[in-house]
Length: 189
View 1 (cartoon, rainbow, N blue to C red):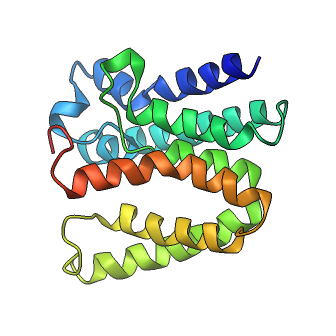
View 2 (view 1 turned 30 degrees about the horizontal axis):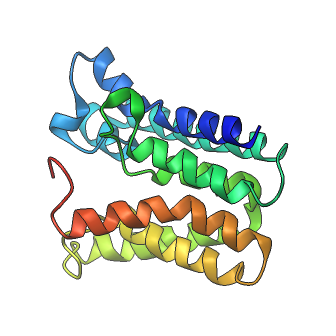
């Protein structure tokens, strides 16, 4: 049963809605931008970007809802499977998006209080980064940089609790992708 639920979490993550939105527009978003809500927002406009973001957050919440039916030890792994599926989707040649929105939806559904505070922190740091014209770390956009601070806050306040593993495992694939981007080993970017 555990492997089945982990597989379902990965497959839900693999339904990359940014790529599907691009296909509706007869484009491959991966040729234009990152295959996530932020890339859709930049390339197709706010309505498309917001729709993809909300749907991606919803996919994360759906997997969190499924996680309620499993043992507490499996819940962190379901978050990791979801995020891994979004970043390396089986349906799209293992070339997906950044994973922020599905990971956010997953941890938001399971840890709403700390995630909402972390989100406020993330938006504040991201806005400050944007106001400085992204000079401090030009290779990182305002949203990913803000998310890093928000997620670090989340990990700090859940340290020593069950929520720490939930957050850490959902975010680990994002960290791996971030290292790949920063070292120039991420495709097409």
